[in-house]
Image 1 (cartoon, helix red, strand yellow):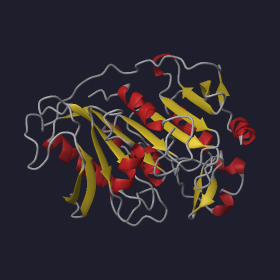
Image 2: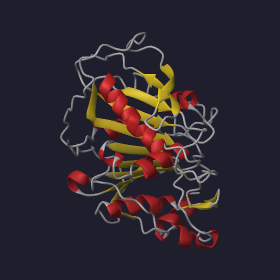
Image 3: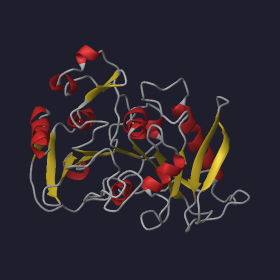
Length: 338
């Protein structure tokens, strides 16, 4: 698989500047705090900080749909202190309960301070999947942001999104590329992302086609922090791309470098070999923007959330890194300038 990965790198013209031990990460944006309208409000009846998450099954969206999500309130929550908000989107066929167990943003060991929200797709998938119906998931996210901001004390400069598979594609392509939500969400972290693109099958048959296919994306700002994890052995959303469900999946190096080019950082990256070469970390950008777009390639990892311990994805077949603390570190570096 390492040999195949090197071919992908060559074909995608991913360039590196150094190998070696991980370098200290630089804070790219001075952390600001923006109090939401919900600051000062008491928690809704029946809700307390910490403990088990709450399943909210009767959330009405602005277009009249009834949606659901799981909500984790951090144990340190203070109604007068604005805190971050993290969305975590499940993969196709999964649900909010599965995603909470998988991503572990409700675990105070990783996330002591932020709200964590695990929305449910309807039905069990998100916009971006070619099989998706007409459900307005972007509107759902917009409504949730307004609801949480009006109900709880949220730092509106520090709202984040992560997701797995179809939820990763929704995070890193649908939300991050949206002209409105890219201004409301500070950073994006897709895992094993399914970045489906409209295409004919004949335009997606070869590796060369999948590494050059146009990726439409119109974010409303230039500095959009993107963190992506992908395994070399992902059989569902292959690293080399594929034709799947009537749409084209680009190669992952192409998708990553397209974000770097879109943000004016070109193709040059700093490459760090980790865990005896089993993990390669690619950081695009230079100076204070180094790592604005970051990608982790994990040797042998299948279509799983990276974890050094058993989880609901890997069924005990662990890997050498944990995605969740890396995502939290990435989120903590970035906030919106409101």
